[in-house]
Structures are given as structure tokens and as C-alpha cells.
Length: 79
Image 1 (spheres, rainbow, N blue to C red):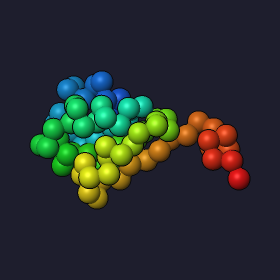
Image 2: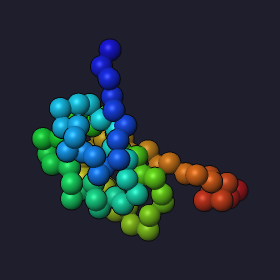
Image 3: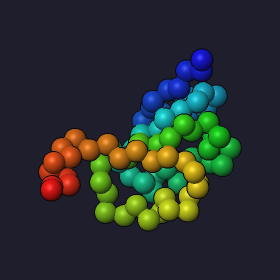
Image 4: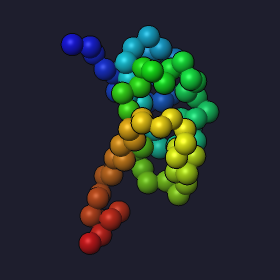
């Protein structure tokens, strides 16, 4: 079984040879900091907030899962 590291985007350089889950609050930062060679190492990415603009991720890398982590889902998405 392979180990998958869950890291903040700011620590990406330290884990270049590992399978990763990368987390950030800014979707555009993913595009700015992850190169094509690193995409194969990503299990998925986590957005730690509901930013205003996630459109940059639509065509970034088809098939890569994006998990939205909400601290207060009832507040963010009231019924």
C-alpha cells in the first residue's frame, strides 16, 4: 500500500517524490504552483474555503478530483 501525504500547497517542494493530496484556499494557486509533471502524483486537491472564482479549475486537469472542505456546511449551503 502506498502512502499518500496530505500537505498544504506551500510545502509542495518538500514532497516532490510522493503521492499527494494538496490543500489550499486559493484555486489559482494550484495552477500557479503545480506543474504538469507533478499532476501524476496528485490523488486529489482540497479547497479549504468556498472562493468566489473556481472557474480556473474547470479545464485545468480533467479527471482530477477536487474536494471542497467546509467548516460550516449548514451556513455555507443552507437548506
